[in-house]
Image 1 (cartoon, rainbow, N blue to C red):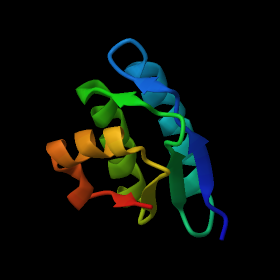
Image 2: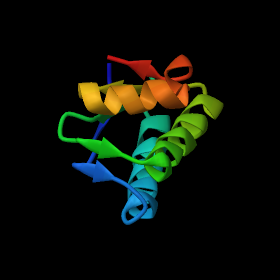
Image 3: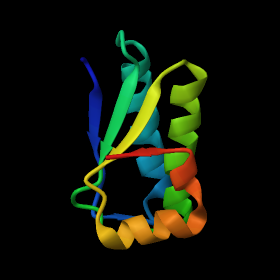
Image 4: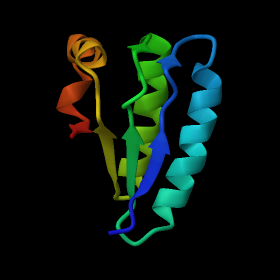
Length: 96
């Protein structure tokens, strides 16, 4: 398996969401070029995510899925998981 792993920052909010979206877009492009087209976002260090951060994740997930790939959030903290659950995106995103 040749998954592409992107390490998410400590905080994904309005101040850095555009930069994170660009980094995720680059990681998605790399993942799409791999045979299994899997992008894993390692959230181990992420303590906070805002709606702008959720949008950044969803934009990348849509891009990967459109190419027939898989988008995975890994090592999600309890606090970030609560935010994800409140938004309802856990129904669309694989969380490990």
